[in-house]
Length: 158
Image 1: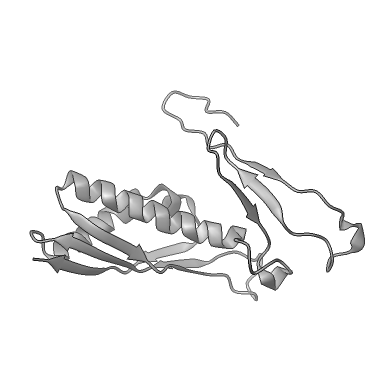
Image 2 (image 1 turned 45 degrees about the vertical axis):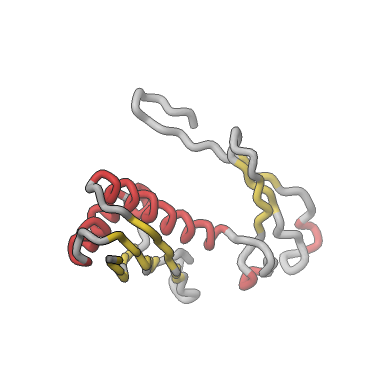
């Protein structure tokens, strides 16, 4: 689906799989390739091990949580840079939850817990406000039906 209107962005990916499902549900190969030309990277993905995939490969559920965490990071860095806050470090141990008993199955919540280190100047409360602004601007979180929460830990150096 190409971008049809000025100012619209389109994101194209290629997903390929080869094998046979004729061997039955338990035994068909779950590994597949994804890419997003012109980017050079190709990822080999699998299903979640709960769905008979390989634990050695990333799975779509992890990619969804990664996308939410990455978008929050990039949104925060942009907001902080515009506010002239010197961010020195950012790490996030994010978690997505998909209840097995909830149908249709889906990730219902994503918890982002960024640890943010900034240079002296702003207070932790001011940085927290920038985290909130970034969350409101995060297009991935805005695109999901899952509840996305951000609980930052802020450290001000200096």
